[in-house]
Amino acid sequence: MPRDPVTISLTTFEESTHMDVGAPSPFSSDVTHSTLSEPTEQPTMDALVIRGGRKLSGRVEISGAKNAALPVMAATLLAPGVHTLRNVPLLSDTRTMARVLEQLGARVEFRGHACKIDTSRIMSFEAPYDLVRTMRASIYVLGPLLARFGAARVSLPGGCAWGPRPVNLHLEGLKAMGAALEIEHGYIAGKDVELHGADISFENVSVGATAQLMMAATLASGTTVLDNVALEPDVTVLGQVLIGCGARIEGLGSRRLTIHGVRELHPVDTTIIPDRIEAATLLAAGAITGGSITLEQCDAGHLAAVMHHLEDAGCDVLPGNGEVTLSGPTRPSALEITTAPFPGFPTDMQAQMMALCSIADGVSAITDTIYLDRFTHVPELQRLGAQIELKGNTALIRGVDRLQGAPVMATDIRASAALVIAALIAEGETRISRIYHLDRGYEQLEQKLRSLGADIERISE
Ligand code: UD1
Image (tube, rainbow, N blue to C red; front, side, top):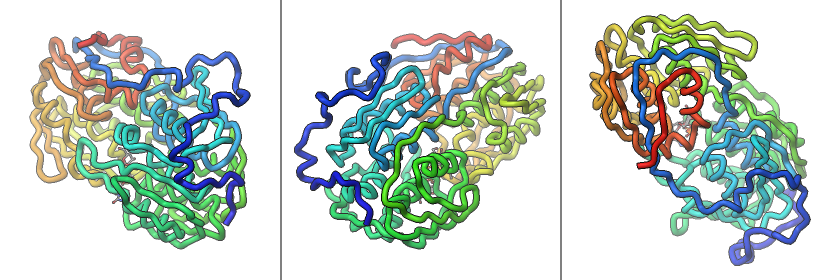
């Protein structure tokens, strides 16, 4: 199997230090952010205070996509050298991924939104529980570590706020490619792994498993065929980045990928795509206030399912060149939404659309087929006066004339965004606690909303 020349046993690496600080830096001296120089991040106890009732208007820029940046950051482990990723959103999740990479021995430096990652000297194969539990996407380092070094020890991510989120498809796929993985003390562990090509058909469309196995297959010996893969832009873009590193991948954009393993990959200079979920969240925010907003630097092609439902709600939505303009209705119409893998309606937007439906004219139904229990936002929206009844994985939302501000609590990234959207229309003041969830996935959301005219401020609790 093709192997990176640096092959050291797992035990040796576990005992080693994390980073060769004496090595000459390939990075510019003009560095504004180095993750290692920061103290370990603690969740801030900040809250958002929003006084609702203002129509949003104006223009705002969309940041780079979190869900594209995270796997691409992990993929840099496949190719030794200095990678440059541009338009990386500055979020606690991208900082966590930087820490995971640093833990392994990579050097990571941010200069604005440009992130340089030097993966020349990987000195550990362990992604520890303390990092993985704060961000499940840390598991993306598993495939690259096994592919390049034949060894990895990565904490199992565990469940999340809205229930179990299995990784069996990742593990079964890697096993089919020859990785004898053990679960020991809560960690997925493999050593002396020599990955080979395999034919793998996913029983579910999985963004995570597609990305994981695509990365692993790039350096495996022989050819891997992945069937029923995810088509999310984050996955397609990861494939394009890997091709930029020298990978041989056929079928990008279709449900079948054929990956011919190569001996080695080289570093890449790439720009992260715009965040379609941030864009869709801001569109929902504009819609609920009956405002008129334009999103800049976004890709309308990634937003079709959301734009279609916003139009059904009565919004005028106009895609332009790298822009989308939305004008909201006086009152939105009720919607029927069912989440599905891309190009279907994203599970990452159902909570925000539920906020919109809470003041719609009529009864809406939102069904989540990806995560059947992803409804932690429901009781919090009810605190604002929303009338929502849960029937299995369907929420029935009887639109009310008005929401009222109240103290509420954020429970995960998208649930938090739903509360922000609801608060923008709620009468009086809404105080949203635990917004460290929001900070994981939205870059400067309150600044962006304030620039559009929202009455929103961040306070320390
Ligand atoms: C999913 C979403 C993604 C979203 C992310 C965070 C889809 C297809 N994926 O990605 O858009 O950004 O949540 O909200 O909409 N599954 C297994 N075994 C596995 C992996 C997944 O059974 O090993 C199941 C999951 O339980 C889920 C479905 O497959 O029902 C899709 O999972 P997957 O796409 O992998 O989840 P994420 O990568 O978290």
